[in-house]
Length: 150
Image (cartoon, rainbow, N blue to C red):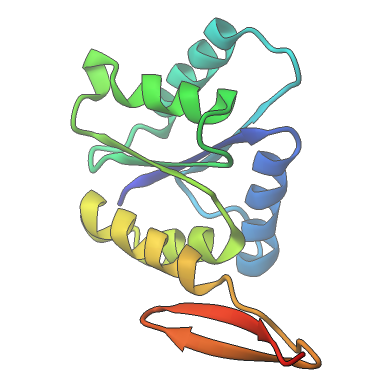
């Protein structure tokens, strides 16, 4: 089973992990969260991420979910994935949301690339317009677009 490491701006990582505990009654085994505090030194954050990844101790790899591409958590996740001891064993997805996390948990018994793809797809499918009064939703390929009727 793959490990899941959530690295995000505080308190998002912990909140996402607590959501999993809410749904499953407890935090599923092999899921960890690392909150990145404002103005935290990137080297310190990478050290924490490395320790946490080793604690996950997953022979099947680790999926790292992070919040915003280009921000410190995503940069740390990328550096983690490129460390020699994790070569080929870590995948990183930016833009974490609850549907993405749920999909990753649900399919984490599959191989790392499959879980990564399913988590991305779940995250994308979880972004939908709800109850827009006075607007029409058009489906353009696989993307929905909100169009005002005015």
